[in-house]
Amino acid sequence: MKVASWIRYSILRIGIFVLVLAGLSLTGLMWWLSALIATVIAFALSYIFLSRQRDELSHDITARLSRKKADLDAESEDAQWESPGEGNAKK
Image (cartoon, rainbow, N blue to C red; front, side, top):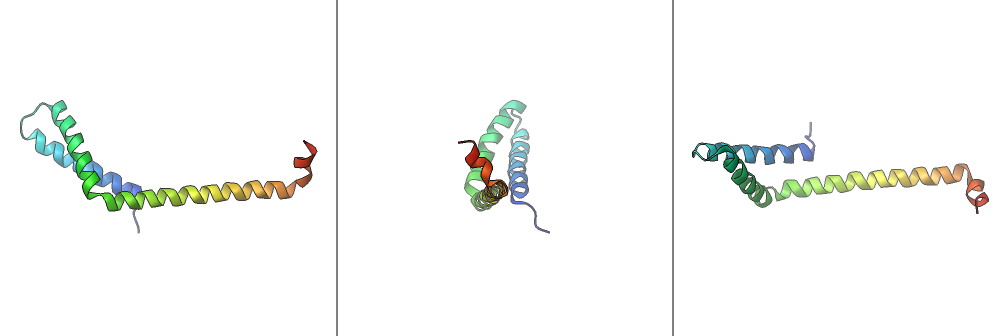
């Protein structure tokens, strides 16, 4: 069973954040400062190390949107074929 690319990417990003936050919490920093620093570090690490997963996610989203657009175009064309006279009658 293949895991959806957005689920895998999200879990990896959350995992990086949690690991960095746990590490910073052990240093004795205030919780909000640890969370802020962990957010910045996790963003940087995911940007550097998760580029392949991000590209997979981007391709998946693009494919889904193009399929949806193709379906909408087909429905529009089918509707015109079903009632060709109505479009000309309004002019």
